[in-house]
Length: 515
Image (cartoon, rainbow, N blue to C red; front, top):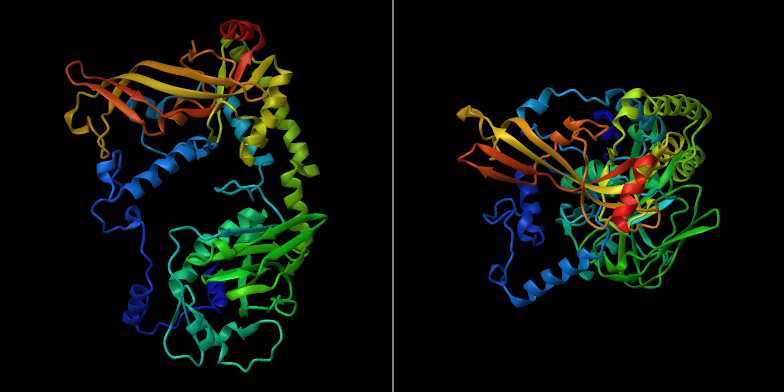
């Protein structure tokens, strides 16, 4: 989005001619932050392991409860290389023996994984609704006709001050044109830089549409007890979607029900909006039903998503159709043709002499890591699910069985003798050459998510990675064990999820291990 387009979007902004006044507003409306989010706190990033590190028994027990509940959840962390400079100097220019196969698979994913799947990699839907994140800035507004800013959570006194600016017509909810309501700039920046990309991701908006979308604020609403929101006259012409930004306040009711082709999404934001904002977004070819507010004041801003690009085929219907195709793994005819060519090339590569002579398990690391065992393909993030489906088809054609596995890499290396470069800026020792490179298969899941290994298995090959060792070398070691006397070091990397290709001729050895 260009600066000019952002300027056009600035219907909801905070008038701040005096920079000091804006600073005073921000200081006066700050909520109490968690300790680790305070940049000026000397204890930032410090870990707390024992009860002595906590201010009270209640805080310690709350932490313990959180840890125990988290242990039972599926852990999905991004496993992509973090572009850390390889700590083994010889790996910085090391060639990948599987380069041709890796290139084909990379090209295949670029064709089959749509550009609407962003970093968040979420499941898309025709509507979405979640609270804003903990690091969101505080909200304050200026309302025409009211002296001074209105801070949030909205108190009944300030709500009444806003309501008094316009005579009560006793119909639906109180509303103001957004030209009379000015939102602070810090939250506006958060809206454009954080919330809007999230909305694109959850709605499955394509990259072309997202880059050419105008977010236009339309109306400011306050719904009090017994009133029901009605935005039928609010949506901008040509908008493909609508966003409802609910500002912090104490209220109940006001649920939002959205229906599309027999499916229903019901959002009940009142439990989350006392201390934080909440947004609901939906495509405009859905049916929306707003429930009455039963107590308090529901305060919201309605905004429109308007495509301003040059592609005449992009509209609500086409974006919804594309989203459904992505959700079901469908490809258009052009994608199917390109995919077939690359699939054939990948099969030929797997059947090449290089791969045949290897005759050992091969690894292809996924975008995310998962807590194994107990995970099946259905549990995977969308991009990993598409990747797994593609490679499963290739494996079935080339004499391999493919499993979801958890892999850990350890490297024994000789430390650099050059003192000036023996430790990097993060305090990690640098090594010249690898003495031993070990890949350990920690678990191997069957289709039901059961681990078929009785214990960890060390892979016999030192080159099992289709993406090449450089991919893993860009990951920062989780631990290091340095022997100063011998100038040797062991790097231990975090466990990462991978697709494991096992030749069918070698499968019996894994089955015997299980028996």
